[in-house]
Image (cartoon, rainbow, N blue to C red; front, side, top):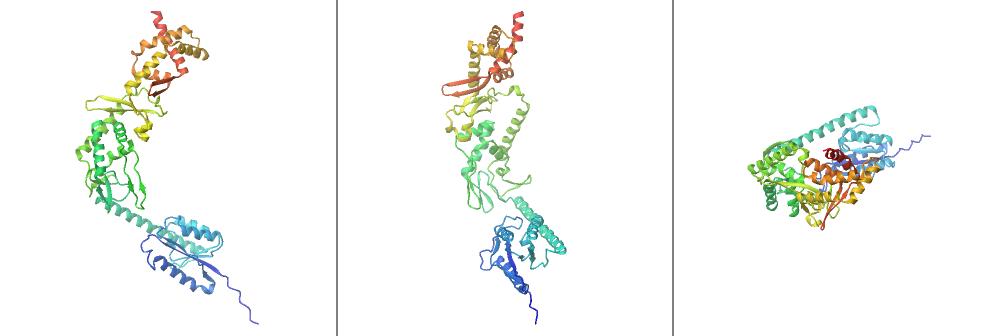
Amino acid sequence: MKPTKAPIKKVRCAIYTRKSSEEGLDMEFNSLDAQRESCAAYIASQKAEGWLERPDRYDDGGISGGTLERPALKRLLADIENDRVDVVVVYKIDRLSRALMDFAKLVEVFDAHKVTFVSVTQSFNTTTSMGRLTLNILLSFAQFEREVIGERIRDKFAASRKRGLWMGGVPPLGYDVVARKLVVNETEAELVRLIFRRFIELGSVSALMHELTAAGHRAKSWTTQDGKERQGGPIDRKALYGYFANRVYLGEAVHKGVSYPGEHEALIDQATWDKVHAIISENTRNRGSRPRSESPALLKGLLFGPTGSPMTPIFTRKKNGKMYRYYVSQTAIRNGYGACPIKTVAAGEIEGAVVAQLRGLLRTPEIIVRTWKQTTEDGDRIAESEVTAALTRLDPLWDELFPAEQARLVRLLVARATIGNDGVQIALHTGGLATLAADLRPTLAQGASR
């Protein structure tokens, strides 16, 4: 009696195909089909070993091998984890991955589920040490090829920039992109020229920003390559400094800090560019050399508008050198001047109103009693008469104080100043009143001894 042959175990084979670009995928017979046909023929040649092709298709078209975030690959890994695959068949190993580290992760998954990996053009078996060595060598060359391609792309990009071509990204305000070239958008170009011109006249980025916001001007709106609309936001300080630093407005193309003549039309002449940058340099020097005590922002961090929004100090300097100071609502800055009932207020006027109200409050019996009680609670033995004399003497002394000392006293005494349509209201620091009375005692004693 002849011995019966053991039944051949079925080996379930999954074919995986990938193509980096989408070019040609709409053809009746494309690269993915060619890869699949070769893999199917290899599986058929192993039919005697029980190899059977799974009906599921795992095709990733138009996706780079440098990432594992691929829909078909994820489905393949899920089927492997669910014990539906015994062998993964590909045309070449770089179809599965071009990155050595990524492929090592895939091999770990294969090994964990006892799945073999086969390349029909690079025959090896990943279950053996020799197969692993061969695999790593081949993957190293695949990664090397990928890096070389990346270098070629970067070199091509640099060469294109040197020729003045636009190589992608957000188009600059004032231009549209047509056939990889910057074409002047006349409406936006006028805004760019206005920005440069008004900065030369105002000499202040903050003042220019608020002027542009009040006029309703916004940054560049554009459409991405996949058709998505991107709306430009308000033109803030960052955007303005970006415009002033962008040499594309001089008709140049910049690559890695080096400027080359561009193929587009310039919006700004060299003289205007030089004036703008001279003002920026001068402002930077002035800010760096000016002592803190001269910074004209007495109510910085203390003044709030009727909506509760902080009021930010800004200044502008005219051609005659005179400086004009304002406080501007943060609500108006963020949402436009129509969003706040009080947009700006002259700094001198509001600071004078707060100081006048503060000096008046310090003479009232209620504040004097509150200050005296606070000093006794703090354990300081100051007579009520001493507190009265100290606070009363502050008013005539105020105008003799240096600006830095005036600012210190305002921050010591004022917790918050709120401006409304009916004037300004201040809230005092009770603890600050006690500190002030203690500070003035030596001055009071000197006056009494004379």
